[in-house]
Image (cartoon, rainbow, N blue to C red; front, side, top):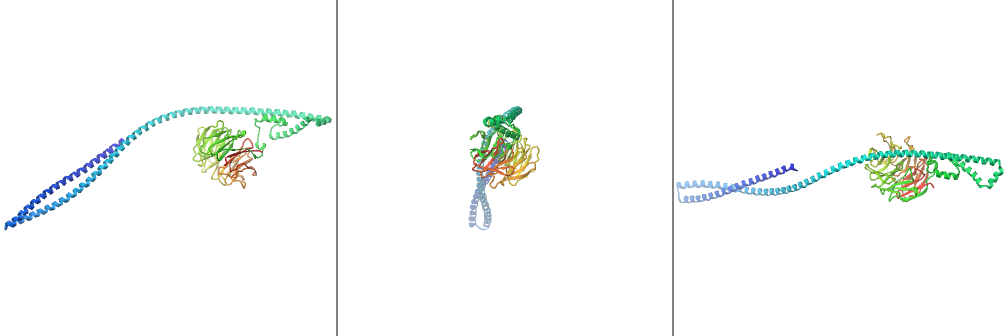
Amino acid sequence: MSADEPDWRQSIVNRLRERSRNESRGKEIILQNNRLIDQASQLTEDNLKLHVENEKLRTALSTGGGKDATGAQLAIAALEKKLLAQQEELTELHKRKGENSQMIVDLSLIVEQQKKLIAEKDKIIAEQKTANISLRAEVDMLKSSLEQLKKLNATLLDEHTALKLSFSSLEEKLRGVQDENRCLLDRFMRYKSKDADKLNEENENFLRKRSDKLKRDLEDAVREPNSTTHRNSGSPSQFGDEGDTASLTSAGAGACNNGAVGGSPDYFQSLEEMLTPLPLPNFNPCIVSSSIPTNIFMKFEAHDNETHAVKWSPVERLVATGGGDRKVKLWDVGKGALEPRAVLGGSSAGINSVDFDSTGSYILGTSNDYGARVWTVSDNRLRHTLTGHSGKVMAAKYLQEPIKVVTGSHDRTLKVWDLRSIACIETKFAGSSCNDLVTTDSLGSTIISGHYDKKLRFWDIRTEKQADDILMPAKITSIDMTKDGYYLICSIRDDTIKLIDLRKNQIISSFSHENFKLSCDWARASFNTCGSKLACGSADGLVYIWSILGDLEATLKGHNSAVNAVSWCPNSNALATVGKGKRCIIYTES
């Protein structure tokens, strides 16, 4: 502001000089006008004197004659000529006087206007001075606050560095604890395997002794027919032994099918209780049970309004649901509780999808508020918030558990997140809104995404190249893959579900029904654990279950409105479904 002061001061000096020049010019005009007035007065007096002399000459001329008369006439003519010239000069002076008077009036008006303008400028200058003072005070205050912010920023940087160091040390400890946990888990599994082998060995010894005893009894019966007849008619315990023989034979056949050791019914009952916590070798749910879950085990109101997503935990009978009320809820189905075990908050818009990691320790949810969130199941705490998309996030999956997560959004991008730094490390531009995605293996090296432009896209995170797309007949609402990674189902908006062989990247089958219609643009279909069946909800409130061979095996009733999502339990033949009517239904075998 100090650099501008000479300018306005010079401007005021120039204006004062201009006003002085204007006033001095008016002063000269006034002085000239006064001189003209004096000259006019003098000429008036001269005129009067000439009139007097003229009258005297006329009188002398009328009284005298001859030569004196001629001289007098000449003098009179000269005087008249002089009088005429003075009258003309007087007229000219009067004219100039009028012009000067008008000029004085105009100059007076200009002077008044200049005075008013100077007064306004003085007022503006005073206001500017006041504003300058306030601005200088504000600048001083801002400089002071800037210094304080710099100091605070330096403090925060120091704290951030310290927290980063502590985080690194804690992360190292966590890795050590995880390694120790894996070692303990391996030891535990080895001990369990040894226990199972020991139990199988004891069962084999028991069966061998039992078989030897039965053989001896049969040989005794052949040698002593009367005694055998007596025992068969009178001894129910001996009849029970024969019943045990039949049971043993059928159980032995079952053992050959399932890879376990058989025995008597009573012994099997106690043995089954002993083996309950142990994992069966080569366990295949499809071999154990191929029935369809048609019995409604539980029915409850999951959310305050429409429910969008449902997922089973991989390690326990726990179901997660997400709805338009901005919450993720955990339901303990194993205990049959109709109240949620936990309510996970943090989202500011409706939940679109939920998913567990392979250990069931973390739950991943996506939302319409352009973000995704990670909660821990053990303490129900919000651990990470992933924001960076410019559209609603429709799906998310773990890539390298529990390090990386991939999200798909309506902003036409896929983002890969590092949960250690809680930052986006890669963005893949798909060119179309992503509605669902899956990862092909435990390392998450390949991502498959389904889009509104009818394309399935394949992404290899190890390279920048994108594999060939697969074009579907209509826009894709959901995708799901078998555990072996060989087959993929894709639900599309022409109300069909396509089965794709990922080894050939070809559509090999299509599932549909005349009454089957997808409920919305994000309706979710799902494989069962072994990939032998698939299920999907419909707009008519039914859940349709197809065999992988193409046959419609069942339609499940229970919902009063459209069904949005289904999820098969990984540890049993149970199915969880949710829909627009806020209701969640758990189906089990009848």
